[in-house]
Structures are given as structure tokens and as C-alpha cells.
Picture 1 (cartoon, rainbow, N blue to C red):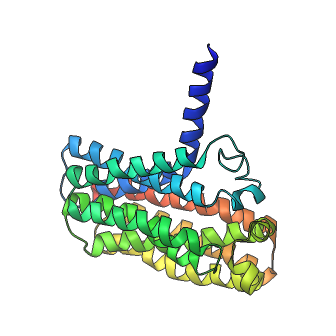
Picture 2 (tube, helix red, strand yellow):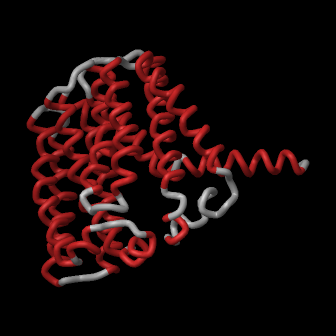
Length: 294
């Protein structure tokens, strides 16, 4: 392989890493869940365009997030080797790549789905890049702001089919919103020193570990009843309800155990990993049990 080919391959790999593929795959999975669960049908071609356009919009937001946070990323173990903080890429290339993705993806979302879905995509993009990212270095309340664009993908999948924001779509949005808070708090607890070194605000740094553990429990108390509503709304059937109850009670038990025992980083890391398992199990159950309810 020539040196030029190696350089192009390395640059392409670095550009891909800016899009945060693992995070993007989670977003796409929840978007697809919204499409599948929504009443009605969307032609396959439009589903494909919607998913690709959503992927491009998410990739654009993640790329610009990496650009803005390139200085603070140098102080965190999980981000210091990204192309920008490691010095492997010029900021101008990342900027052009991110803006180009957004310029193509958002109009494609309007064409593949509808204007409402494209508007929600634009809201997610702008709030993530222009509001959430700058706020991370100013206040721990950025966590709540960031949960909004993170919760919009399943609603976007729903509106791509229905063309409207209704109760079912809002419930999917609410589940993702509430889930993100314990997820984010767990990360902030076991990476507290890295957040401090990077100059990023978090609840553990501003209010302490005890407050963080308490908030995890409070948001779980709100999350679990919310996950029961898809059954009440006939979006999913009794098997989903069983899975939601078991997963939810386990999650609440894990949160309460950490709160009452005043546990530290090992518990926070366990909570983080369980939150990923929880969301995966919940959406798999939703998707598989849809046929029973509709």
C-alpha cells in the first residue's frame, strides 16, 4: 500500500472517529425503534433515507462537539487520543466535515421523512452543538439540556411515520430523557477527577457524591412508571410489560443500594454498564412485543 493510500485511510478513520460511532449506533437504534413502533407504515425507501439522514445529522453534531471540546478532551483518558486533541487533524478539516454532513443530512431528512422530523433533527443538532456543548464547562445543568437532543431520536422515528407529535411519541421521548440522567450521573461519578481536570462541570463536582446518588434514585423512580405507559397505550404487549418491570425494579434496586450504602466508583461503573443493558433490553422488548399490541 502506498504512503498516500495509508494517509487517506488514516484520515478517513479519524473522520469516522469524530462521529462517535458507538454513540451514533445507539441513536440509530432508538430512531429505528420509533419508526417500528409508530402506528402506520413508511415505504422502505423513505425509511432508509430517514435513517441515513438521521445518522448524518448525529455524525455532524458529534463532529462539531469534538471540535469545540478539543482542548478539554486532552485531559480525559477516554478522549485524549481523538484526532483533534492528539494533533492528528487540523480543526478546519473537522469543521468542514461536520458542516457538510449537516448541510446534506438535514434537507435529506425533510425529503425522506417530513418537515416536522427535519425540524426535530435541526433542534437536536443546534441544541447539542450550540447549547449543551458550551454549557458543559459552565454548569452541571448542561446534563439536563444534553438529555433533550439525546431523547429526540425515537420521537423523530415516530414522527417520520405519523407526521405529528402525539402521546406515544412523547412517551418514547420521555423514557430516553429520564434514562439519560442516571446514565450521565454514573459516568460523572466514576470519572469525577477527569471532569475536574478538563474543566467540565458535573453534579458530583458541584453538589457532591451524595446528591448525585440521590438524583439517580429520584430519576429512576420517575423512569420506571414511564416505561409502563407503552403497555397502557397499547404500543407494546404484556411480555414487554414484564421485561420493563423486571429491568426497572432491578435498576431501582441498584440505585437504592448505592444510595443507602454510600457506595463509590465501582458501584457507579456498575450502574453505568447496567444502564446500557437496561436500555437495550427495554427497546428489544418493545420491538419484539409490538406485534402483540398492534
